[in-house]
View 1: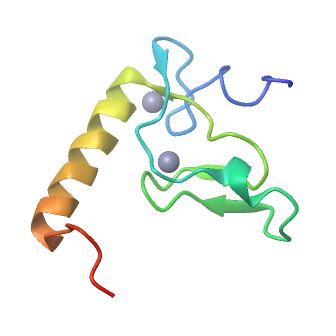
View 2 (view 1 turned 90 degrees about the vertical axis):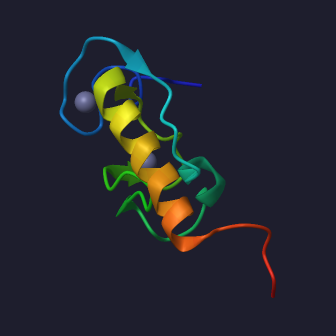
Length: 83
Ligand SMILES: [Zn+2]
Ligand SMILES: [Zn+2]
């Protein structure tokens, strides 16, 4: 497993300090083998690459993303799926 993509720079602001795992529920590594390539993470909007783990974010961006995700869920009342 190479990790040259992921832990070098914040995927969002390219800050290299204080990197943490992204709070995103998007898991681009699960898309391995699909002809998608680069796409925008639906949670944080940063560019991710299908087949590779989500790049890390700096603490500032991760905090912002996780609070936005929480707000979004509260606003949209995301609960157990009813399909
Ligand atoms: Zn950042
Ligand atoms: Zn993300």
